[in-house]
Image (tube, rainbow, N blue to C red; front, side, top):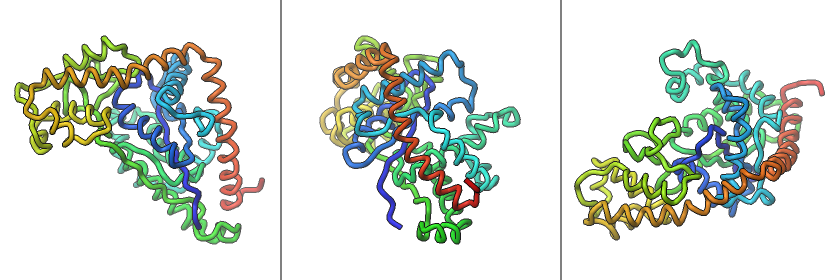
Length: 343
Protein backbone atom coordinates (compact mmCIF):
# COMPACT_ATOMS: atom_id res chain seq x y z
CA UNK A 1 0.00 0.00 0.00
CA UNK A 2 1.05 3.62 -0.48
CA UNK A 3 1.88 5.41 2.77
CA UNK A 4 1.31 9.13 3.34
CA UNK A 5 4.69 10.85 3.37
CA UNK A 6 5.44 12.03 6.89
CA UNK A 7 8.64 13.03 8.70
CA UNK A 8 9.35 12.19 12.33
CA UNK A 9 12.38 13.04 14.42
CA UNK A 10 13.24 13.77 18.03
CA UNK A 11 15.81 15.54 20.17
CA UNK A 12 16.68 14.59 23.73
CA UNK A 13 16.17 17.24 26.43
CA UNK A 14 19.62 16.82 27.85
CA UNK A 15 20.46 20.52 28.19
CA UNK A 16 23.01 22.80 26.51
CA UNK A 17 21.95 22.51 22.89
CA UNK A 18 24.97 23.34 20.74
CA UNK A 19 26.07 23.97 17.18
CA UNK A 20 26.30 20.24 16.49
CA UNK A 21 22.63 19.78 17.38
CA UNK A 22 21.71 22.74 15.18
CA UNK A 23 23.71 21.82 12.06
CA UNK A 24 23.35 18.06 12.50
CA UNK A 25 19.60 18.05 13.09
CA UNK A 26 17.51 21.16 13.69
CA UNK A 27 18.49 23.11 10.57
CA UNK A 28 17.36 20.11 8.51
CA UNK A 29 14.07 19.94 10.44
CA UNK A 30 13.36 23.51 9.36
CA UNK A 31 14.06 22.76 5.69
CA UNK A 32 11.94 19.61 5.67
CA UNK A 33 8.80 21.38 6.86
CA UNK A 34 8.53 23.03 3.44
CA UNK A 35 8.07 19.62 1.74
CA UNK A 36 6.53 17.25 4.30
CA UNK A 37 4.08 16.98 7.15
CA UNK A 38 6.47 16.97 10.09
CA UNK A 39 6.30 15.69 13.66
CA UNK A 40 9.12 16.87 15.93
CA UNK A 41 9.36 15.39 19.39
CA UNK A 42 11.26 16.24 22.57
CA UNK A 43 12.10 12.67 23.58
CA UNK A 44 11.93 12.87 27.36
CA UNK A 45 11.27 9.11 27.72
CA UNK A 46 14.59 8.47 26.00
CA UNK A 47 16.30 11.00 28.27
CA UNK A 48 15.53 9.03 31.43
CA UNK A 49 17.36 5.91 30.18
CA UNK A 50 20.15 7.73 32.04
CA UNK A 51 19.12 9.33 35.35
CA UNK A 52 17.85 12.90 35.00
CA UNK A 53 17.32 15.44 37.75
CA UNK A 54 13.51 15.87 37.97
CA UNK A 55 14.02 19.54 38.84
CA UNK A 56 16.03 20.09 35.62
CA UNK A 57 14.14 17.96 33.09
CA UNK A 58 11.22 20.40 32.59
CA UNK A 59 13.65 23.26 31.92
CA UNK A 60 15.62 21.18 29.43
CA UNK A 61 12.40 20.06 27.70
CA UNK A 62 11.26 23.66 27.30
CA UNK A 63 14.72 24.68 26.04
CA UNK A 64 14.60 22.17 23.18
CA UNK A 65 11.07 23.31 22.34
CA UNK A 66 12.27 26.92 22.33
CA UNK A 67 15.13 25.94 20.02
CA UNK A 68 12.74 24.30 17.56
CA UNK A 69 10.63 27.45 17.40
CA UNK A 70 13.55 29.92 17.43
CA UNK A 71 15.19 28.07 14.54
CA UNK A 72 12.05 28.40 12.42
CA UNK A 73 9.79 25.38 12.94
CA UNK A 74 6.15 26.48 12.83
CA UNK A 75 4.22 24.79 15.68
CA UNK A 76 0.88 25.67 14.06
CA UNK A 77 1.61 24.00 10.71
CA UNK A 78 3.57 21.08 12.16
CA UNK A 79 3.52 19.14 15.41
CA UNK A 80 5.91 19.85 18.30
CA UNK A 81 5.36 17.90 21.52
CA UNK A 82 7.12 16.00 24.27
CA UNK A 83 7.06 12.23 24.04
CA UNK A 84 5.76 11.43 27.53
CA UNK A 85 2.45 13.18 26.80
CA UNK A 86 1.55 10.53 24.19
CA UNK A 87 1.27 7.16 25.93
CA UNK A 88 1.08 5.25 22.65
CA UNK A 89 4.88 5.59 22.24
CA UNK A 90 5.49 3.39 25.28
CA UNK A 91 2.57 1.10 24.44
CA UNK A 92 3.82 0.34 20.93
CA UNK A 93 7.38 -0.02 22.27
CA UNK A 94 6.23 -2.95 24.41
CA UNK A 95 4.80 -4.71 21.37
CA UNK A 96 8.06 -4.06 19.55
CA UNK A 97 9.95 -5.53 22.54
CA UNK A 98 8.10 -8.72 21.67
CA UNK A 99 8.85 -8.45 17.94
CA UNK A 100 12.54 -7.47 18.06
CA UNK A 101 15.16 -10.14 18.76
CA UNK A 102 17.80 -10.02 21.49
CA UNK A 103 20.51 -10.61 18.90
CA UNK A 104 19.48 -7.45 17.07
CA UNK A 105 19.86 -5.34 20.22
CA UNK A 106 23.19 -6.97 21.06
CA UNK A 107 24.57 -5.55 17.82
CA UNK A 108 23.69 -1.93 18.71
CA UNK A 109 27.02 -0.14 19.05
CA UNK A 110 25.59 2.92 20.79
CA UNK A 111 24.50 0.86 23.82
CA UNK A 112 28.04 -0.46 24.16
CA UNK A 113 29.42 3.09 24.01
CA UNK A 114 26.92 4.58 26.47
CA UNK A 115 26.96 1.70 28.93
CA UNK A 116 30.76 1.58 28.97
CA UNK A 117 32.57 -1.21 30.81
CA UNK A 118 29.89 -1.66 33.49
CA UNK A 119 27.14 -2.92 31.17
CA UNK A 120 25.55 -5.06 33.86
CA UNK A 121 24.74 -1.87 35.77
CA UNK A 122 23.14 -0.05 32.78
CA UNK A 123 19.37 0.42 32.80
CA UNK A 124 17.17 -1.96 30.85
CA UNK A 125 15.73 1.18 29.24
CA UNK A 126 19.11 2.04 27.75
CA UNK A 127 19.32 -1.47 26.28
CA UNK A 128 15.85 -1.44 24.67
CA UNK A 129 16.08 2.25 23.70
CA UNK A 130 16.17 1.36 19.97
CA UNK A 131 12.79 -0.40 20.23
CA UNK A 132 11.28 2.77 21.69
CA UNK A 133 12.88 4.75 18.87
CA UNK A 134 11.21 2.42 16.37
CA UNK A 135 7.89 2.97 18.15
CA UNK A 136 8.40 6.76 18.05
CA UNK A 137 8.68 6.61 14.28
CA UNK A 138 6.17 3.91 13.47
CA UNK A 139 3.36 5.00 15.80
CA UNK A 140 2.91 7.78 13.21
CA UNK A 141 3.75 5.43 10.32
CA UNK A 142 6.39 7.96 9.34
CA UNK A 143 8.09 7.42 6.00
CA UNK A 144 11.17 9.63 6.45
CA UNK A 145 13.50 10.27 9.39
CA UNK A 146 16.27 12.90 9.41
CA UNK A 147 19.14 11.19 11.22
CA UNK A 148 22.82 11.69 11.91
CA UNK A 149 25.36 9.03 11.08
CA UNK A 150 25.31 7.78 14.69
CA UNK A 151 21.59 6.97 14.48
CA UNK A 152 21.60 5.12 11.16
CA UNK A 153 21.94 1.75 12.90
CA UNK A 154 18.86 2.46 15.02
CA UNK A 155 16.86 3.41 11.93
CA UNK A 156 17.90 0.14 10.29
CA UNK A 157 16.55 -1.64 13.36
CA UNK A 158 13.27 0.27 12.98
CA UNK A 159 13.04 -1.01 9.42
CA UNK A 160 13.77 -4.57 10.58
CA UNK A 161 11.07 -4.35 13.26
CA UNK A 162 8.55 -2.95 10.77
CA UNK A 163 9.35 -5.75 8.32
CA UNK A 164 9.14 -8.49 10.96
CA UNK A 165 5.82 -7.14 12.28
CA UNK A 166 4.46 -7.07 8.73
CA UNK A 167 5.66 -10.64 8.14
CA UNK A 168 4.59 -12.06 11.52
CA UNK A 169 1.08 -10.65 11.25
CA UNK A 170 0.68 -10.74 7.46
CA UNK A 171 -2.57 -12.72 7.48
CA UNK A 172 -4.14 -10.51 10.15
CA UNK A 173 -2.97 -7.32 8.42
CA UNK A 174 -4.59 -8.48 5.21
CA UNK A 175 -7.76 -9.64 7.00
CA UNK A 176 -8.18 -6.20 8.58
CA UNK A 177 -7.94 -4.48 5.22
CA UNK A 178 -4.42 -3.02 5.42
CA UNK A 179 -3.07 -4.70 2.30
CA UNK A 180 0.34 -6.35 2.30
CA UNK A 181 2.01 -4.18 4.96
CA UNK A 182 0.81 -2.13 7.91
CA UNK A 183 4.06 -0.33 8.75
CA UNK A 184 6.20 1.49 6.16
CA UNK A 185 9.96 1.09 5.82
CA UNK A 186 11.14 4.51 7.04
CA UNK A 187 13.87 6.07 4.92
CA UNK A 188 16.81 8.05 6.34
CA UNK A 189 17.24 11.68 5.35
CA UNK A 190 20.88 12.70 5.76
CA UNK A 191 21.45 16.22 4.48
CA UNK A 192 23.94 19.02 4.44
CA UNK A 193 27.73 19.30 4.43
CA UNK A 194 28.15 19.28 8.24
CA UNK A 195 25.95 16.51 9.56
CA UNK A 196 28.70 15.59 12.04
CA UNK A 197 30.17 18.61 13.84
CA UNK A 198 33.32 17.96 15.81
CA UNK A 199 34.77 19.47 18.98
CA UNK A 200 36.50 22.85 18.63
CA UNK A 201 39.29 21.49 20.85
CA UNK A 202 39.74 18.08 19.19
CA UNK A 203 38.72 17.46 15.60
CA UNK A 204 38.59 13.70 16.17
CA UNK A 205 35.73 13.91 18.72
CA UNK A 206 32.10 14.79 18.12
CA UNK A 207 30.95 18.10 19.60
CA UNK A 208 29.25 17.21 22.89
CA UNK A 209 27.72 18.87 25.92
CA UNK A 210 29.46 16.28 28.11
CA UNK A 211 32.99 17.43 27.22
CA UNK A 212 34.42 19.26 30.26
CA UNK A 213 35.63 22.36 28.39
CA UNK A 214 32.91 24.80 27.34
CA UNK A 215 35.37 25.97 24.66
CA UNK A 216 34.85 22.66 22.86
CA UNK A 217 31.38 23.71 21.67
CA UNK A 218 29.25 26.68 20.67
CA UNK A 219 26.02 26.62 22.66
CA UNK A 220 22.92 27.93 20.93
CA UNK A 221 22.42 30.33 23.84
CA UNK A 222 25.97 31.78 23.63
CA UNK A 223 26.12 35.51 23.02
CA UNK A 224 28.20 37.16 20.28
CA UNK A 225 31.26 37.61 22.54
CA UNK A 226 31.26 33.95 23.60
CA UNK A 227 30.87 32.74 20.01
CA UNK A 228 33.74 34.94 18.86
CA UNK A 229 36.04 33.88 21.70
CA UNK A 230 35.39 30.17 21.17
CA UNK A 231 36.06 30.35 17.42
CA UNK A 232 39.24 32.39 17.95
CA UNK A 233 40.48 29.80 20.46
CA UNK A 234 39.44 26.80 18.31
CA UNK A 235 42.36 24.46 17.70
CA UNK A 236 43.98 24.74 14.28
CA UNK A 237 47.38 23.97 12.78
CA UNK A 238 50.09 26.31 11.48
CA UNK A 239 49.52 25.56 7.80
CA UNK A 240 47.51 27.74 5.43
CA UNK A 241 44.08 26.50 4.37
CA UNK A 242 44.27 24.12 1.40
CA UNK A 243 42.71 25.03 -1.91
CA UNK A 244 41.09 21.64 -2.45
CA UNK A 245 39.04 19.33 -0.21
CA UNK A 246 41.62 16.54 -0.42
CA UNK A 247 43.98 18.76 1.55
CA UNK A 248 41.59 18.66 4.52
CA UNK A 249 41.76 14.87 4.94
CA UNK A 250 44.83 14.76 7.26
CA UNK A 251 43.72 17.93 9.09
CA UNK A 252 40.60 17.22 11.19
CA UNK A 253 40.42 20.61 12.93
CA UNK A 254 40.68 22.48 9.62
CA UNK A 255 38.12 20.15 8.07
CA UNK A 256 35.73 20.79 10.96
CA UNK A 257 35.91 24.59 10.78
CA UNK A 258 35.55 24.61 6.99
CA UNK A 259 32.56 22.26 7.33
CA UNK A 260 30.94 24.54 9.91
CA UNK A 261 31.42 27.59 7.68
CA UNK A 262 30.02 25.68 4.68
CA UNK A 263 26.93 24.56 6.58
CA UNK A 264 26.21 28.01 8.04
CA UNK A 265 26.70 29.66 4.64
CA UNK A 266 24.75 27.05 2.68
CA UNK A 267 27.82 26.26 0.59
CA UNK A 268 29.99 23.23 -0.15
CA UNK A 269 33.45 22.84 1.36
CA UNK A 270 34.89 23.23 -2.14
CA UNK A 271 33.21 26.64 -2.48
CA UNK A 272 34.59 27.75 0.88
CA UNK A 273 38.11 26.67 -0.07
CA UNK A 274 37.88 28.50 -3.39
CA UNK A 275 37.33 31.68 -1.39
CA UNK A 276 39.72 31.11 1.52
CA UNK A 277 42.21 28.47 0.27
CA UNK A 278 45.85 29.55 0.55
CA UNK A 279 45.02 32.09 3.26
CA UNK A 280 45.88 32.01 6.93
CA UNK A 281 43.54 30.64 9.58
CA UNK A 282 43.41 33.98 11.36
CA UNK A 283 41.60 35.65 8.44
CA UNK A 284 39.30 32.66 7.95
CA UNK A 285 38.38 32.68 11.64
CA UNK A 286 37.41 36.36 11.44
CA UNK A 287 35.01 35.53 8.60
CA UNK A 288 33.70 32.49 10.50
CA UNK A 289 33.05 34.61 13.61
CA UNK A 290 31.06 37.14 11.58
CA UNK A 291 29.02 34.39 9.91
CA UNK A 292 28.36 32.43 13.12
CA UNK A 293 27.29 35.52 15.06
CA UNK A 294 24.98 36.61 12.24
CA UNK A 295 23.37 33.15 11.97
CA UNK A 296 23.29 32.02 15.61
CA UNK A 297 22.89 35.31 17.49
CA UNK A 298 19.19 35.81 16.60
CA UNK A 299 18.44 32.16 17.45
CA UNK A 300 20.04 32.46 20.89
CA UNK A 301 18.20 35.71 21.61
CA UNK A 302 14.84 34.23 20.61
CA UNK A 303 15.50 31.07 22.66
CA UNK A 304 16.22 33.17 25.74
CA UNK A 305 13.01 35.13 25.19
CA UNK A 306 10.90 31.99 24.74
CA UNK A 307 12.21 30.13 27.80
CA UNK A 308 11.17 33.12 29.88
CA UNK A 309 7.57 32.32 28.87
CA UNK A 310 6.97 28.76 30.11
CA UNK A 311 3.20 29.15 29.83
CA UNK A 312 3.54 29.66 26.06
CA UNK A 313 5.97 26.73 25.71
CA UNK A 314 3.67 24.45 27.74
CA UNK A 315 0.79 25.47 25.47
CA UNK A 316 2.75 24.58 22.32
CA UNK A 317 3.63 21.16 23.77
CA UNK A 318 0.06 20.47 24.94
CA UNK A 319 -1.42 21.44 21.57
CA UNK A 320 1.14 19.32 19.73
CA UNK A 321 0.50 16.36 22.02
CA UNK A 322 -3.24 16.58 21.42
CA UNK A 323 -2.72 16.48 17.64
CA UNK A 324 -0.07 13.74 17.88
CA UNK A 325 -2.36 11.63 20.08
CA UNK A 326 -5.02 11.50 17.36
CA UNK A 327 -2.56 9.97 14.88
CA UNK A 328 -0.93 7.68 17.44
CA UNK A 329 -4.27 6.35 18.74
CA UNK A 330 -5.37 5.49 15.21
CA UNK A 331 -2.21 3.42 14.70
CA UNK A 332 -2.41 1.81 18.13
CA UNK A 333 -6.04 0.76 17.72
CA UNK A 334 -5.18 -0.88 14.41
CA UNK A 335 -2.16 -2.63 15.96
CA UNK A 336 -4.32 -4.03 18.76
CA UNK A 337 -6.75 -5.45 16.21
CA UNK A 338 -3.92 -6.91 14.14
CA UNK A 339 -2.20 -8.51 17.17
CA UNK A 340 -5.49 -9.88 18.46
CA UNK A 341 -6.18 -7.81 21.58
CA UNK A 342 -9.82 -7.39 22.66
CA UNK A 343 -10.73 -3.71 22.93
